[in-house]
Image (tube, rainbow over all chains, first blue to last red; front, side):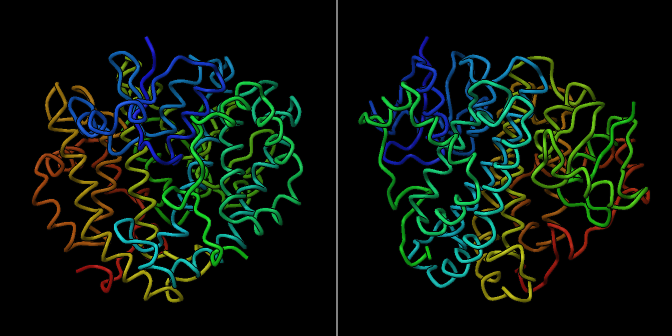
Length: 235
Length: 235
């Protein structure tokens, strides 16, 4: 049976980390809201017995799983996107959770006060937050990923072992999003992380990923998503 | 061999979610920095082959695991603090990740601009952020936990099934922390979530948890931790 992904239909957002895994594995899945609108998603969201807090959530038969990182934890072994050992699986998940922390901080750069307000209602705070994020956090997160690659006993081609994992795909998406939202700051940080750059490039050139990125299934970045290009927040 | 927990020795912080699980299970563990200072932690943090991004991290034999939620994913089955089925395990983890999101937002209330700055350097922004957190997010997170309890087919005594899980312990810590940091706002929100209140009370009265909470192993809340009581941020 096909996986059913439920997520907002007009943005990449957190759902994109799940889409990338499904696409890179050539999995049979339905991007429900893009086919049928959001009614079904809104009805299932919060439905018993296991209500998700927010999209994305995935239906896999009788299971409904929310939280992008938990979805990837579930999908990893099924899609062949994680190592076989328990040690590799928990390490891959740890990397994913750290990437998710970075993504949450990206959201804070344009919404440092409240998700319920528009960016336009929190611009001065966003400017301060974004400056700290650019100067301190982008180098810190990318530098940590570089260290992970350099410390991999199997070599720096992948984050975990010698095979593609969902963490590699998420690294790609993080770098892609940062480069969209903060082009100048990200270029500076990437100059110090050549192994991150190389892995990003390797993911782009994976045949299934390349096909996905050039398809209309890949939504563009936009100022409705998590990674937003407000030039005044870069520098 | 005893588990080794590595975390900042003077705060509850994110390490507390791990401590609570270890304590509630009566596990043999060493709280390394409280015994021996932070040198060993700082040396191991970031060490190959699997460098953690930040404390807490746990050593379990040869494994080193960072990210509090990943640590609990690892410990859950070993400590008997999660159900047997894969469905129960991923659902427990999903709840944990959502509680971790709430905790991250608590941190943002006093540090909406930068972790590298003092609270005193971001007080106006913190006041705005905290107002939105009190009015919108506390009721939303606690309301979701109430819904999870109400939707549990095994009844509202636990978040997952009919047994104690690490998610129940984390609910306790979230409620305890919110009540410390935002006593007025939390009291208002809890008035609408009687099942959350009852579970919190049940966790407090578990013999091992009660013994831990009254021991000197339980650090007090403080304005160095994640949950901080700044009266101007409550209301």
